[in-house]
Length: 153
Image (cartoon, rainbow, N blue to C red; front, side):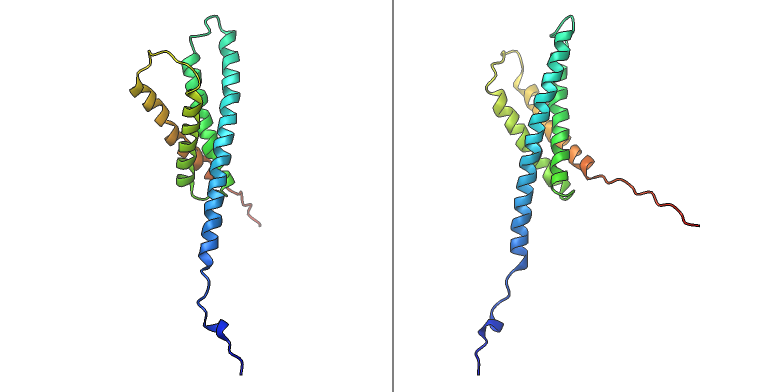
């Protein structure tokens, strides 16, 4: 008689590999979203700086357009990350992408010398607004088109 000890083994947990692939996919989508957000940021800064240079007073719109570039690229980062994640986990994906994007921008802005005229509390409030905008972008990326159904007579 054969000893079939394989039938007495505990079954493997099918969720462990699925969870690892889900976390890996989430990390990839966060990195992709933050990377596309940075590319969008640099393109918008390039366009907005050209726009500012075309004005008579180049410094009049610099602050507003730089904030617009940051916030629009945060929306794009959240949108791209949730699309990469197959429209799943919009809140988690948007929040982590926004956090990653915000930390990347803060690291980049450490390299640029600034004047001491800006208050730290205002800078913190303006930087923390990246998170809700990235989450909003992820929910915008999750919206699906409604399929028109034609009635058959």
